[in-house]
Length: 114
Image 1 (cartoon, rainbow, N blue to C red):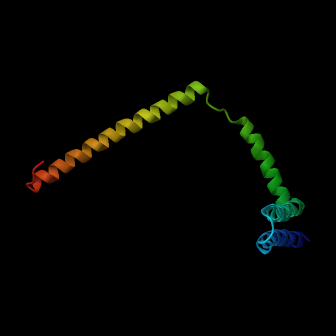
Image 2: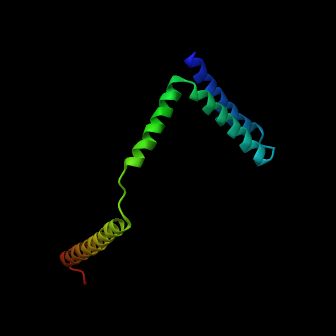
Image 3: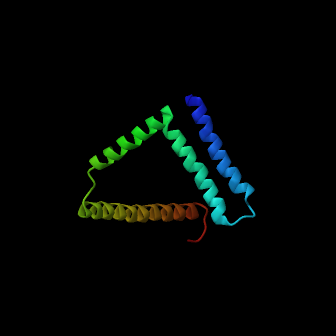
């Protein structure tokens, strides 16, 4: 029975997409509504499958876990961003210096004017 429900889910999705394509002459609102109804029917049908119920439980658990996350304060976020920004500037200058030094060395080795 579960496989039948999953098959029905795919049928609803394909029907929604096919309706969107088939109704290419119709107004965009009707086309989008057709695809939304197909996906909504697929979601409702999937909710009653074993995999759908497991996915629903996973989503619930994920939402609970996100509430447990300790987010940094505004001050901490600004300080971290400042350190990252400063590091990027210093690294860019360092790489520019290395590039310029190597270019000068190559030009010197090839007897070209600097």
